[in-house]
Amino acid sequence: MPTPRRGLLRPAAETDFPRLYEIWSSVDEHRFLQDWGRFVETATAMLRGSRVWVWSDGVEVHGFAAADPVSAEIAAVYVHPRAQGRGIGRALLRKCCDGLVKRGHRHAWLVTSPGTRAERIYRDAGWQEAGIEASGAVRLRKRLVA
Image (cartoon, rainbow, N blue to C red; front, side, top):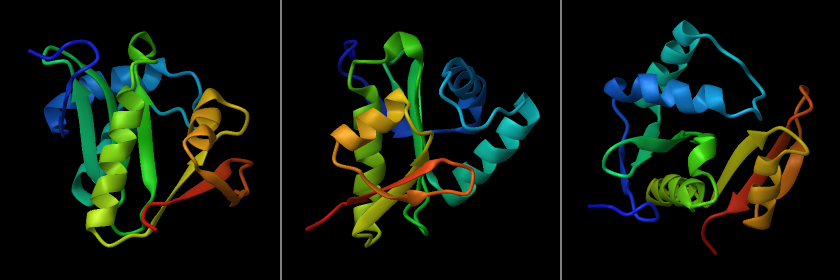
């Protein structure tokens, strides 16, 4: 059985949507706020076109992440506030990046809100600024392979 620091990374399923929405809506550093219907629409598209992973302790899902295998965008990394600080986000991000490398990508990119905890975590992990979006969001990029 997994311990709090050791969980299971597995592909997400539609049955995870209620918990993913709960996690997504519990994080207060959002660029977007969506209702349940819009969330399901977005999550369904991500399941179809992206690789979506969840981190579970064997009982409950505590985080999820998604990467677009075509564009190499890290589209989402969310960890429930009660589970933050345990390495779950790093594990999810690493899983997504590993999948992009297997698809032949040398770099990954993501967009995040400026001045947030998320931006600091990404920068501390070696992500570098690649520009500012029209919305004011920061575009970050990371080399995945040498």
